[in-house]
Length: 194
Image (cartoon, rainbow, N blue to C red; front, top):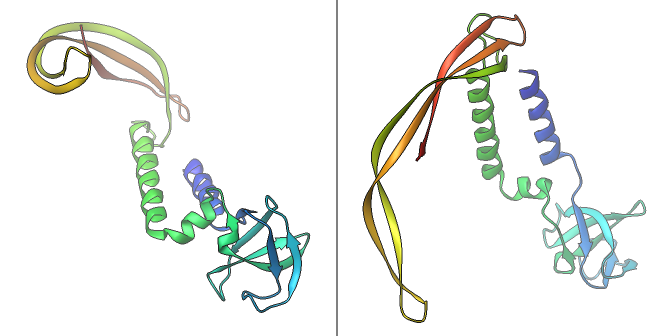
């Protein structure tokens, strides 16, 4: 649970606190207000890096900070690398869905690795994997063949059904709880062609 809380705090910080890094894409005038009629504070050279975000007054302008001086630059003169802060502001629903997916993955991992005795999450420490048995069987697989002409160019594809020999190995996974020391096992398997 501590890991989940720590992860949530870090995710929140990435999306909401860090200022957006931007770069001036061509020579630009830094102005005192977000409009073309305001006074020029400074002339910025192309490639100048600074912190900034879209102005709350006029979304066509960036409010930027250079050497503790706050000013405005038109957004057409700014290039910005990918930034979590700006992404979260522009796509709040996607960020919410992403956060929800990550939360579900963490909860599933926590439940899957919880101790059967003390019920604490993320408790499983794998000790050894013991081989139990092997089983062979056949499965029908769909294969796609590429058809080529005499020049080697692809002219189409053909799908066919094929009987493939599959092998399933069965294991006993021995585990120990990191918290209470309880030892337990569960059965697992892996299947592959061959």
